[in-house]
Image (cartoon, rainbow, N blue to C red):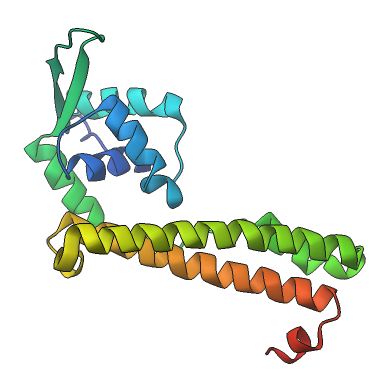
Length: 199
C-alpha cells in the first residue's frame, strides 16, 4: 500500500520569502535585499540559503517564476506566490508561535560583571549603547520615511505597510530599551549616583 505523500512544509526562511512575495513578484536579488532590510532587523538568513529555499518552495508549488530577458545583463527569474503559497502563508500566520529562547552574550556577561574590571566593562557597555543608539536612529528615520510614504495606510490592517510599521515600532522599542540599559549599566560601573538611584 502506497502511503500518501506528506504536504510540503516550508522552513521559517521559506515563510519569510512567502511574506516578501505576498507584497508582489520579485527577483532573487530583490528578495535577497528584502531579507537584509527590513527582514534582517528581526530575522537573519545567509545568502547561500536563499536560492535553495526558493527552489524548494517552487518544488512545493508555493511559488512559481518566469524569466525576464535582459539585454545587458543575464536573464533573471521573477518569483510570485501561487494560491497554495498564499494559503500556506495565511495558515502559518494563524498557527501558534513559540516564545523565542533568548541567547544574549552581553546579558550573560552582565550576570558576572562583579568579577570584572569595572572601567573596561563600562567602556564595553558604552560601546554597545552607541551601537543600539545608531540602530534606534535608523529605525526612527525609517518610520518617518514610512509615515511620509504610506500615510494613513500604516494603520490599515489589510495594508502591507501595517506590517512594516509594526516591526519598526518593535525595533524602536527594543533598541531604545537596550541602549538605556547599557547606559545604566555603564553608569553603575562608573559609580554614578544617578544610575544607582534609577534616575
